[in-house]
Length: 207
Ligand code: GAR
Image (tube, rainbow, N blue to C red):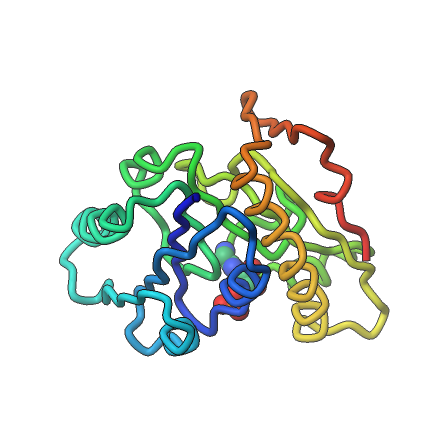
């Protein structure tokens, strides 16, 4: 059984998708938020999942917060840490500690549009395709080795909100898939590339 700790900052719909996938061999050990009012915490607690909140505003520095967060995560002995809408920039020490065992999901087709406001930026750039990326977390924001991507077509009348909704549906498919591969021990890192034993066709989702 692989222990998974999921970090959220808000509603946690990706967390919910992973929990509801009921992946064989995976145990959701805890859901931890950096905001005590994160809606996803209540959802997880109602389902009997251990939850914790660690308010980043209570810490003097990013390093102090990350050290306390790592201690809390490690109490659950995670095999994999899953960032699911966890809106914090992480220190290099934190990312190094979880190297090769921490995922993030980002709402763009990386390496395009790292950072914030991805959907508006994709529209402003005239993109015909948009999507989401699951990647291993490294020290550089939104730049780690890519595990899975999902693609949607951009419609002429799309707004940032309508595009976000389309992309979110894709996120809910590729994130459980990527976690499944990790739990099944099928992922191998080779530099910036990720190899999926048994084939990665279903990690390139086109909607
Ligand atoms: C998701 O769209 C996720 O890709 C994005 O925040 C949203 C969280 O939604 N993450 C980032 O922008 C990280 N850079 P959720 O709380 O419903 O999963």
